[in-house]
Image (tube, rainbow, N blue to C red; front, side):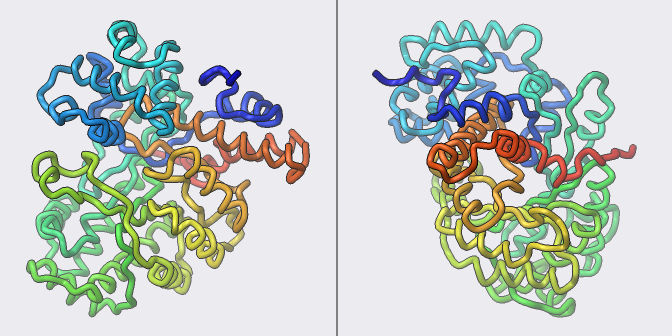
Length: 474
C-alpha cells in the first residue's frame, strides 16, 4: 500500500525529516531574491479574471510540456478561449507524472485554493469554477498572493534604463508589509554583438540624461544607473552569461572595441571577451563598494527554434541547456576583481548540471574576507529545479563547501502562484538532512539541525542581501 499522494508528509521519508520540516522550515518567511514578477502588477494589486490568466499566461515551463503532449499551439499561446487553454492543460497534467510540474500544479491548487482533487479533464470544470470564484473575490490580487505566501522581500529583474516608478510607488503603499526592490540586469550593455546594442545605448543615454559618444561616457552612464537603483532599494545585480567570455584588457583597448560595436561592426570573440571583462570588472567594483550581491546565470542556450522565435519572440519555451568551458574565463574574471580588492558577494548558477563541481570548487578559491558564504553556489536553476537537481546541487555544495551558509531558494518565476516552490525546496532539504541522521551521518541534534534549516530557508538570505537596510529615497 503506497503513501497518500501529497499529504502533510509529502517528500518527507523519515521522522527526522518530518520534524525538521514541520517544526523548523514550514513557517519561515520567504526572501525571493530573484524573480520576474511585474512591479506594475504588484503596485496595481492585479487581479486575475480566471485561472488561465493567473496560471498559464507566460509560463513557458507549462507550454513546453503541453507541446510535448501534442497540444496545438492555439491552445497554448494562440487564440483559443481561456477555458479551452485551461482544459488543454488539465488534459496534459495526468501525462506528466515524474515532472515537477505535476507536483507544483497540485501544490498551488492545494495551498492557494484549498483544492485537493487531482487535475484532469474530468475534474477540470469543477476546478475551473471553484478557483475562479475565489480569484474574483477578495484577497487574491497580486499583493495579496505575496502576503499569503509569507514573503518579506521580492527582488524583481529590471533593465538599467527602467524608471523604477512602480518600485517607488510600492514603497509608499500603506498596509503592504513586503518590500519590492529592483534587480539590476544589464545584459544589453554587455552583448555588444547583438542588434539591440546600439539602440539600447541610446536608451541608456536618455535614462541617464547624458550624452554617450565614447566608452568613458558609457561607463559613467552605467554607474549613474547603478547608483539610481541603489537609491531605489536595489541591492542585487544579475547577469546572463550564456557563454562565459573573459580576456584581460586595458581601458584604451575596451574603448576601441566599444566604438567598433557602437558603429555596428562585428566584434571578434577575443574582443568580446576583452570588452565584457573590462565592463564586468568596472561594474563589480561598484557592486562591491555598495555591498551588493552579483549574480551570474550561466549556460542558457536561447531561442533555438528560429521559426517560433520569429512568431512568438523570446522566453516562450524554446531555450535549452548550453555547454562549453567556463572554468578558465570565470576564474579569470573573479581573479581580476580580487586583484582590485573589489570582488563583491557573488552567486554562481549554471543551467548545465555538468558544471556543478566546477562552480562549487571554483568559488572555494575566492572565499574570504570574513564574509560567511561570500561566494554562493546558487540554487538549482530552471531545468534543474526538480527533486534530483536540487538534491545534486545541495549535495555538491555540502561535499565541497559549507551547506549551512547556503542562501536557499528563489522562484525565478513570472507567476504569483509559484511561491509553493519554496515549500517544495524546503521539503527536499529537510528530507536530505533527515536521511543523513537516519544513516548515522549527522548527529540527531534537533537544535543544531533545526537552526541550520532555518538559516538556509530564510536567515542566511536576510543577512547576505542586507535588504533590511534598504532605504528608498524619493
